[in-house]
Image (cartoon, rainbow, N blue to C red; front, side, top):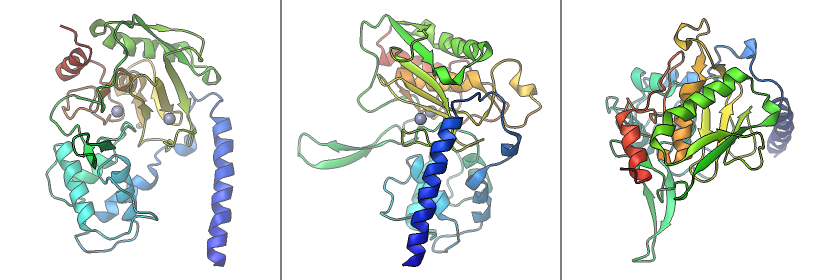
Length: 321
Ligand SMILES: [Zn+2]
Ligand SMILES: [Zn+2]
């Protein structure tokens, strides 16, 4: 009983800490904190589970389940916490993950799978589970989609309305983004512009902009907290929400050759922006590795050219001939 009380206090303290972190996030973010370098947080412990097999229990295995749940491979979380048992659910989730990323389907946490899970990636889940009402039978059915081989749309084929002539975007004023950053975003929008029935324009008013770009640290109030350096880089919402959030704690490179960056964790801002703009326009993750909508982006890597699959997808979504 006293133990539970103790935990309650701990989480209350944590909540206060999170609020203060959020306040810090409104300050300049472009100079990364050295103390965060080379920190993978809990995902690096995934290497401890490579020999774990069905039926075995290993302390901390629940973190792998949390990861797979977060990205849609385990549809439902238990009411309390995931167990540390290597159970059938985990095997199934690992197999789906391996299938989606064209890895060997072993159902085990082998080296390749663990290495892949530790790569920086987009925060939008790979499989989105929705509760749908089947109108023919009136039954509640669960469906997931987007395990196909190419481009995918969000449920309901969400897109900006027909007749839209221009989409405006703005930056969170508190971020004070510099011109190098602004140019990187402008280049990212220009990658998509030739294929769209509307143009993109930066405006200063954050209230009226269709797309709102902001760098945030940790918990920033939308239920999808950022996790510091590496791991989740950014997330954006499908039309017509317009939220485009980036993790302020990444080592962003906005100009120059990211592949020659002396910082091993350097992430190319334009590459991430091209991917997230795809979400903002209505494209979901693709499992074509050459697509900009592939969810994973390695450090010191540039991926800014739309793939054949991306162009095909956006043309279908907006019915462009
Ligand atoms: Zn994504
Ligand atoms: Zn967010």
